[in-house]
Length: 214
Image (tube, rainbow, N blue to C red):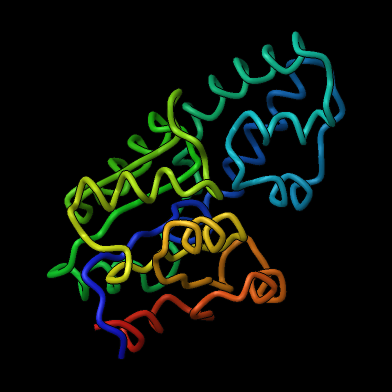
């Protein structure tokens, strides 16, 4: 087993399965704007790069005015629906309980006001020592800034930290920050895609974390 002092989790696709609520909110936005709705699976593939990029991908570029209006409509819908079907992935409660003697953080490209509302709604705030979401002055993953800020805030060395996530952004951010990286193949990304980034670990279920790290 590998000794770590801090476990950093991505949110969407790692701790929570939120794709249905995101896709529903995107399509409600498109309906408002008179745009054709997108297949859910296509919208799922856009998740993980921040809300603005999600909307840019979904509207396939579009002019700035359309994007801004779509972002405003999306926010209204998502704030109303972000806990309709969003759930924790199997085993997450047990994993967080198992590591409660460690420092645990969430680092996500999801905006902070969405992140906080979801974590509060799932009664998980007390499980985390630090929660960092997208804000106006932070660079998103794969840039390491969010991870480095977490390490500084919790006073833990990068070499004693693992970043756990389902996307290439998580693996690349971990490598750039100097932490261990653990890809999760049960999330929104594929195992093949994650392997291409050469993570230190790759797991098929959250329970495997309890056998990898002490």
